[in-house]
Length: 404
Image 1 (cartoon, rainbow, N blue to C red):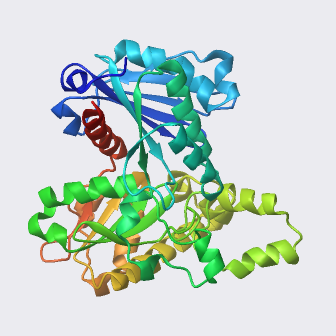
Image 2 (cartoon, rainbow, N blue to C red):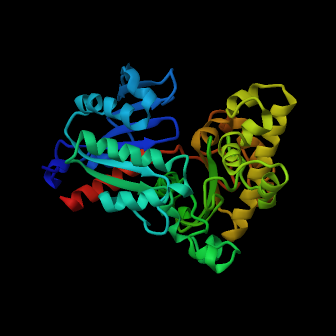
């Protein structure tokens, strides 16, 4: 029997599954009103999936990591590794799993909000794999794995693209022939669950000013910007795929399409080689030849590392200016994501070149990774930690209760 609304209101729990290209992050939240809190009951991680050094652990809130032996299953892919870990999570969840919410990178044109998963939804998600090959297949595999372990558990898909459904047509349309546009080629945007968390958090920080013109910089191994007005997405840097916009750990960001044609026609590279390059060997890694990790590059004295950081900052400055222009100005800048929350030097370098937007940064606050980085009287510059898992838990709880 599927979990009921009454179960969700009492002792049930919400499982959140965030499947990446080589890892799966999981969290368990209470399914009652406490699901609106940011802190889960426990977290878990499977990392380096497919590699000999694959590993997994579970960590109860306030406790230490507990290793979980995956055996040979970790080398077989996301679904086999997840099938091993799920019973271990259930044993420590503190209540029955009432529903499972999944981060799904691409919802295409069909999904502008969370949706209960059935076979028809899964078939639709399969058709979107060509738009997000690095992540979409793993999200689908995670759904199927949960369904195999707990067939009666309601599963909910939460989409990274959904938050950007409010972007105006003029901002999401590419200047391409109608036949191409009819095939679905347009700007979708990603990192939407992260931006949704920021949008919900801003009133508690900025008050009424949260409804103004906000640029959020989600800077991590994947990176993008979102321009908000009225706490809704109005512009974003990622496009048809997660390749566009900012320089990222392994992805190049905005690149002249003619360069791709040159690789195909003049360099003789195969499409598969170009795909591998664009998704896994470009960005900070491709620029430096050293690492995709911002910490490694900031600690390096190599000129290639310096160049990588300079290009990264240059692209961020240009794109923040462009997004601010698109939304008609800037009332606050918010940093989030692993780099945005922790790389004080990168934040300082970006803000230093945006004084014309009224931005400034207090060195002591910046060094401390404080909530508010801007000096008195300057346009607010904030750090708001990302919490996609809490957003997924909220969305999943809402649909689970509605379905009960």
